[in-house]
Image 1 (cartoon, rainbow, N blue to C red):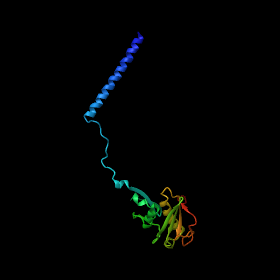
Image 2: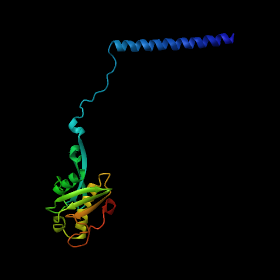
Image 3: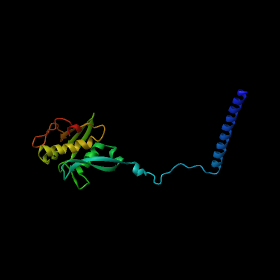
Image 4: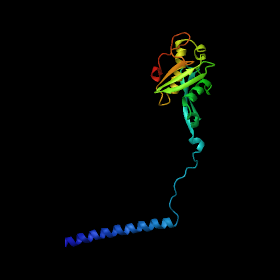
Amino acid sequence: MKKKEGIFIVLFLILIVVILGLVIYISNKNKVENNEIIEEYTPEEEISDEQLRNTIISLYFINKESGEINPEARTININDLIDNPYKYLLEQLIEGPKNEKLEKAIPENTVLNNVELKGDILYIDLSHDFIDNAKEGKENENKILETIVKTVTELNEVNSVKILIDGEENKCFKDEQINFEKAFSRSDY
């Protein structure tokens, strides 16, 4: 008798599951027919093509008040970086900051002659004005180099910077406290 009761309970449970399945199926079918299905979420403001092309870069300048090297974030069009990102960053650094609390470290009239990545070292060829017009003193000269190194090493492929003056290696600042024999890396600062 217990076997018959067990079979009866199992059949009863199967019947309940089938009925619940039918109720859910019919309920969902009615929602589809009545267009009650929740549509995909659409944001109120879509991202424009212009916004998709923008990126943020960091350029490093001297804080006028503290004398420390501080980053200045700029939103730029990614297309500006496609041809030669190193040249673009250095030209922006030479041009100077947009923030009035910052000042550029690159000496006046410095011209970027050439820039080339070899392995993970970025060779930067600057005009002679870079050393002629630099503020003398090891601290000032270190700040000049730090702004350059920190700016270009923001790019993953650049680990260090080698400074050339009018295409020549092993130059130095006028006071000869810092020379450019070695490549400068971010860890130097």
